[in-house]
Length: 425
Image (cartoon, rainbow, N blue to C red):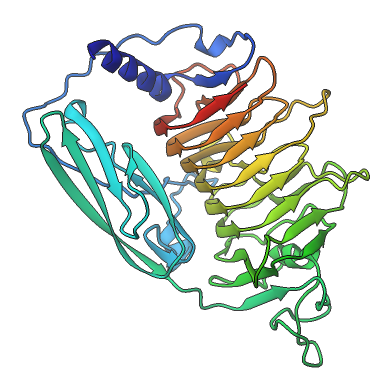
């Protein structure tokens, strides 16, 4: 038992203080960033105090170009981490419960009847409006327990609803009705129109853009640049019955579809959409969602399917501390390729960010690492990673510094719950 505990502590220490940890290697590879093992630092913890559960729900302190702190609560008025519109993703941190060395189990009850989750960090998506009490229970080896609770308030969306119908719609309509009843009133026809409006000031906080289930929608535009700060608060989802709506790309080969250069894209959700990124006629998208500016906050991919991208479904943030994303949530998605161009060396997703949750997803076949990440606080659990490129890794977790920087650079990956994942060659 003692050996197992020591191994667990060593692995966690590597994740916290080393510059780069790779999980799920295929073949053999040498990584200069991990050749020098970190020195063992004995941290003496005060274990005399009572068992204490502690829940943290916090944000990354983002700075503007002048190193002034940005107040997210002011910039995104009404959009909190524990109170906002459905679907509301939340990252819960329990790692600061104490005495840490004596805690044998962390158990999370999300208050909505969903299964209990075990781990020092947890994440959950709330899809039904209401108020929920989340409970963290910590237990030591003797069976003693302590609990802490936090309240989550999920609001019903009350903004405009835009409809997209590939059969009844027309992109000249206003999108505000499911049927055409005269004049400009009626649904849009294409995904091109729906996603292009991200580059305008049409969408507001609380709005929904809904594709009709059982239909296929054309997407032939790229380099959609969402409006400058703040562009936030809306959801792409579905209505009606049947299979997930298919979003079929037919635009410029190798292009980025949504490309956020500026700052302030936040509280955006993609729910129950089936993206087909290659029409097999010479039109294949490069990246779907690329947010390289700072202040990107709470972007959710929920039950999204992605087929045959050149590269990533999403790239969030950059190395610079002023360009780190905060809150990327990926739940129950299926991201896969049917073939890989041997000349390309591409991943399936990349995140430089705080508060990253990756839960119950399937990622299959990449030309590089499947996931390339730098994570400050997160949880990766219940995922399946299969067929990374030979000699690469399924999941790579690094510091935020660029290639070749020392492992003890200013920003390091830390406090990441990794559990119950499957890695296949």
